[in-house]
Image (cartoon, rainbow, N blue to C red; front, side, top):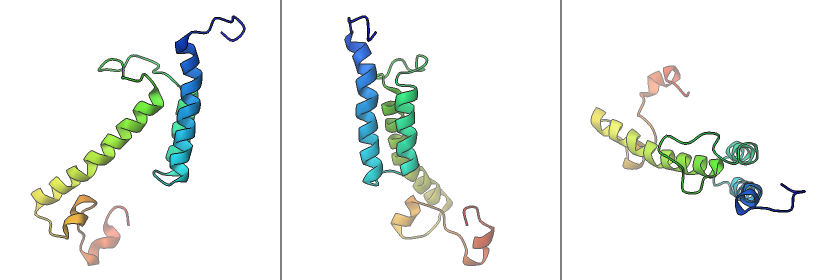
Length: 118
């Protein structure tokens, strides 16, 4: 590809996209928009597997770049998970300030050492 002299747009994008997205992921990590380990994982994915190794179940993604798709999927999950926790808290009848119902489940003070995550 490099020595042949006839570069195609797609081949150039496979080199350019990992570099651009790695820079974006690094900046996001430094700005603490998400964790440092997440940033390095996305950087590694961007360079190790820049395109989908197989066709996705629902067809090709709009961008076709695996690391960006992983970032979007994580974003969607992080938006949906608190809503699910809130719904579970409402169904169970848990009472707490409204903000806390989105991020966890109430625990009695005496049994907090027996709960997961303590």
